[in-house]
Image (cartoon, rainbow, N blue to C red; front, side, top):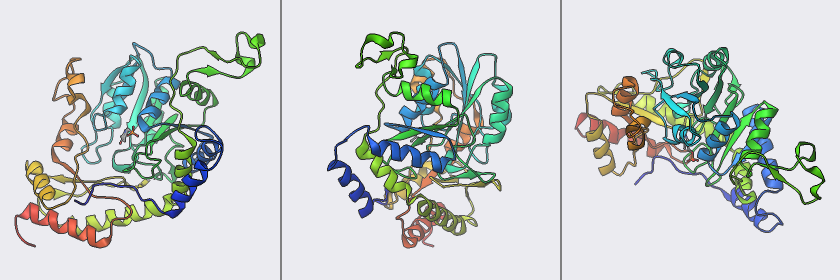
Length: 378
Ligand SMILES: *Cc1c(COP(=O)(O)O)cnc(C)c1O
């Protein structure tokens, strides 16, 4: 079965990890510092704070934003549940606003209509790698006294108006899961330009520990002393994995280029096919395409999905609207709330997309899609 996504590991990655295993630090050491510096450079931000997953990064970002019970987070339902779950875990109420029917990204007007005096955060999700109008959303959030968080699990390496993803929101989160644009096996990061948000993020991912004497309540306790002022967790990315990340980052431009070539090849091979729609683009974006979200029209998504799986093509669906999960249903969220997202979900199939896919693999997928949709040998 051709997978829908997979990592690209080479000898330089293996050497980088081996070197850490032979050294003095397995966790928080020089490889973490080097990885955070490299991420901040790619993202065009002052600081990057690494974490153990994209989910941990979202939790850290919301905690740094000061999210508390009673606060509201406005976000897209067309995302992995972690975007909403991590806010809910902090006691916030998640308010789902509908998506743009073409791109699947949070619709700016729908997000604006969902703002209340309790809105503390607006979270954009860069679906498939296409940035979600971050300039407009940041302006809107700031005018309302809220922060913009960008869930960029799909979009490290993308640009918007020529600016790198990471430099556009108050807090941007990345995931380094194996199917994402680069991997540390499990891992994630939060990037920000704001030193106050950075410090809050660093504390939350490390038990809330305050080590700077100037900030301690009883600094004369002794040289061993550290204090917790607010509760935190252990979300520290180990050196072993950070070294893999730095090694992968050196190839990110190649990964992005290959992903774009594959995306173009799918477009060229499927654009003329009746009964499907190829993904929308934006003139303002140079996306690092994480997904190729094909839309299958006329209620035929499941039939085409099953035909492709039977043909050895490991297609996926991204995503079931987040509020369809029973945990949200039990909180009173109802189907029908965001019709554009529900329709997008009902039509979507993610085709295989990863850097090591060959042109022959892509052509095989195109052939299989055409057969599945037309019901002919083509
Ligand atoms: C993958 C993903 C996450 C979670 O990242 P993990 O590293 O798997 O925890 C969050 N949001 C989106 C949109 C994702 O695709």
